[in-house]
Structures are given as C-alpha cells and as structure tokens.
Image 1 (cartoon, rainbow, N blue to C red):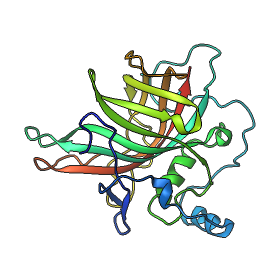
Image 2 (cartoon, rainbow, N blue to C red):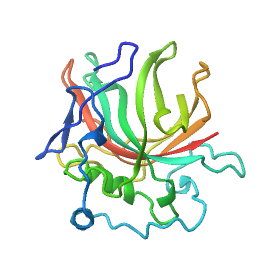
Image 3 (cartoon, rainbow, N blue to C red):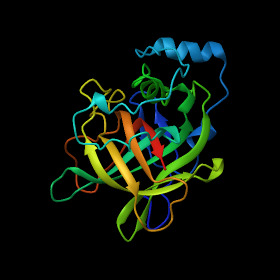
Image 4 (spheres, helix red, strand yellow):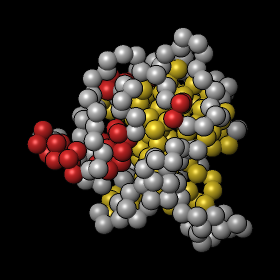
Length: 250
C-alpha cells in the first residue's frame, strides 16, 4: 500500500465482471469520467435497483443518526453542516500475518459536493447510485462538482485521515476517530464479487496537530460497500469500492 509519509495515491482500474478496483498509478477518479448525456444518465439510474427520490432540497438537511443504533454523538444543538460531500473510492486493507484477517485499513476517495441534493428522503440512494456507477463509463451521473480528495498520511498519531478541499477553498480537516457504529442492516453490502458489507458510520474530529482549517469535525453516514473479506493470506491487500456521505461541521 502506498503511503510512507505522503498521501496515498492510486488509479481506479476497473474489472468489469467483478467491480474490482486495484492500485496502479496516481490519477483522479473524475479524470476518467466522460461527459454524459441525459439519456445515458437516465439509463444508468433505471438500470440500477436504487430509485432516487426527488432531488430538490426542500429544507435544511438533518443528520440521519436515527437510522442507526446509539454510538455516534449528535452535533451541538442548532449546528448545521457547513456542507455535505459524497465520497467515492476504495477502502484499502492489508492482511495481518498473525490473525490472517484484514486490518490497518486506509481509504482513498474523490469528494463531490452533494449538499443541495440531500433531504429527508434521499437516505442511501445517492451513495448506492454512485457505487453502482463506479463500474460503468458514467462515473458522475448527477454531474456533481468535484471539490476535494480523501486520503491518509502518516503522522505522530499513526495513519491520519485527511479531507483536502484545497481545490475548492472549502478547507482541510486532518482527523481522528471518536466513535463508530455499524451501518444499518439494509445498507448495500457492495458490488458483485465484493459484497462483504457496508463500512461503519463514523464520527471524527480534528486531531489537534494544527493542520486543519475551516473544519472541525465530520460524520461518515449512508455508507455502501467497503468492508473486506473475512479472511486473507499473509501479505494480501484488498481495495474494496465504497461510497458514503461526509457531513462537515465547524
């Protein structure tokens, strides 16, 4: 796995039969996304099992913690998200030679601005749509604005997650995990051949190393896919496609 003190990089290369993503060289997922027509977009949406509700934001979005069990602290009273990002990429794992299970996972994802589409009815429909789209020529069916990257770097605290919005001027968050809870039982387990389960929902905050700006915390919710197989061979790596919403707060 890449890293060694610098941001993890990869090229999303697709195996069309299994939806498998593996690591080759650095590029952006969106760099491979062609401009799509309305007809092609509608064809993708209708070809998936995920019906999208009306995509108009009718009111301020409410963090959907009611969909999962207790474990994630709520935002402060009256707090609203600064913005909501859709993350699409891979959860990356290395096999533990002792337990022969995958551990030490990091992630790499493109981040899109999905704020205006989120309402009480969208639930996991957009993350499901984008995970399904990741194995097709239509990488960005809703033509969302690309606003940043999610990656990990080595710090004094270990592998630290970064949410880098330098390109869009929305800030930077280097975080640490505070809490996690299992995804809902009806969350999409993942692409064909890699349906090992949806990754946990998370609450992360600034890690205190002084590199964050404009952002103080983030929730990962509405996750689809991303979990690794239950067992592995020593030294094996897994790059499991996933999508999730990231709700950012000051």
